[in-house]
Image (cartoon, rainbow, N blue to C red; front, side):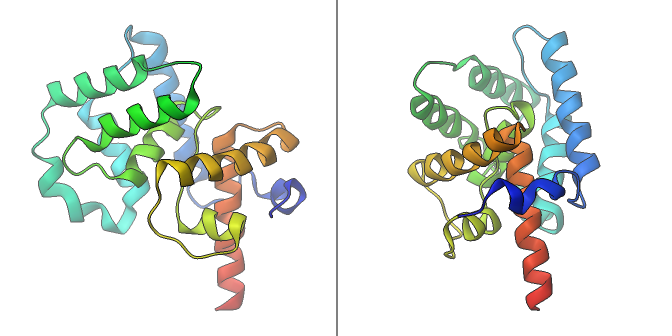
Length: 181
């Protein structure tokens, strides 16, 4: 299991740290300006580009089917789902987001992590491999909750948001992979 000391010096080390911080700040401003909170198609497109990088074009034809009204309605509904049962909240929010054509599970978690970094993180093969020592590329809600729980412990030890601990864990794996290549 990864420990806080393993990633303490990696908080800002990720190559996309500044872009991540800019997106989080933008979404924070949107949350303050919009009641109810929602995201536009352009804002979501920045999340797609941030998360998908070189794979951005793969689902573009599917994402093009989404209207501005659909993006607004779905994201507004997503952020209205708040409750004491975090597992339920995660399941409903994820289900709503992936109902949008071209929005897969990784992008859905990325969106939530950028919009609510204190509560959510991204899950991917790098984080999973670092936290659990095994390879995995597809994740269920249960997997996400298990992963998030471990990341939240590291975040609590560091006094960081869950999203920032996750990004440091991701960077830890990226560096370890580069060394072994």
